[in-house]
Length: 403
Image (cartoon, rainbow, N blue to C red; front, top):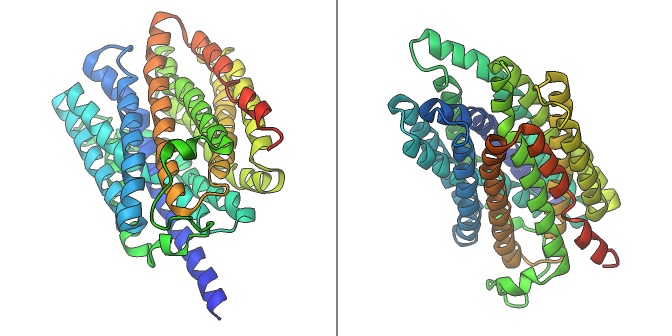
């Protein structure tokens, strides 16, 4: 039966995207967690330690726009393969920066890694495009959920791989970096082999009035649902990155070790990804705007909880960082679903890349600001700033309540 074959093909493609995201998330979480430690080790400066994450997010911003546009021209299979291969190359360069003790090389490496890693986020749109509107959020959330594997494996590998590298006579931070190289390489191979047929040929979307030609970006961005989606993505990313970036350094500054950092960051990434299937069902059932409001409340609460850990109390940070991740998840899945409502394929790819670029830029600013705020004030002040900024989508949610 053609319909059954078509459904099986869609399921297989979504499964491939799931596996690719699992591998890439393990690679990325391992590398990004130690990147601030690498920067501090090289420079001896806490205020500069947020720069690698900043470069990764700015790289991802450029990658989201470029790889989304490239996908429209050459297909998602080839553009996704290229992106993950590039991320692997960037991770190799990060390992080189440890050996030669060069901050510029590390920053270039993280920018290249971020550029290629943007595929991990674009993959959720590819999965959503393969489903009808009433199941789209569940497909998006499934790809986000794939990163749960990385959320568990990435932080847990920090201690063992750093110890293994140390015993072999290398810098301990080289261990987690090597995991990144392997993970991104395997993800690239999987995209090349598994994304057949080309996912764009099976996209479910309204017909474009001018097939093959996307609408002007200004026209797409004037749509209220698109604006709300972008603000939701920006807020979720900014608040999450702002607090998350400095948490490893906050723990280490209070005599914590890599094992403690791994536990806290595992709780955070579990909040970000493990609840995704629930989030997808909630969005499909209640609509993206109600879940975006839930995201605002959760991010606000998480920020306030985190202010109670000025001495890096592990229990408080585990709870606060878990809910920080959960708030991001609610906002990310709900806003990603809202962004796809009523748009033809060409407009989707154009605004998806743009939205992710804006989202990554906001995350980059959050990472850059985090080090400055902590150096100039405290980790508690950082969390208070996050609490205030979590309220950003409220005005647009109110203005679009009748749409």
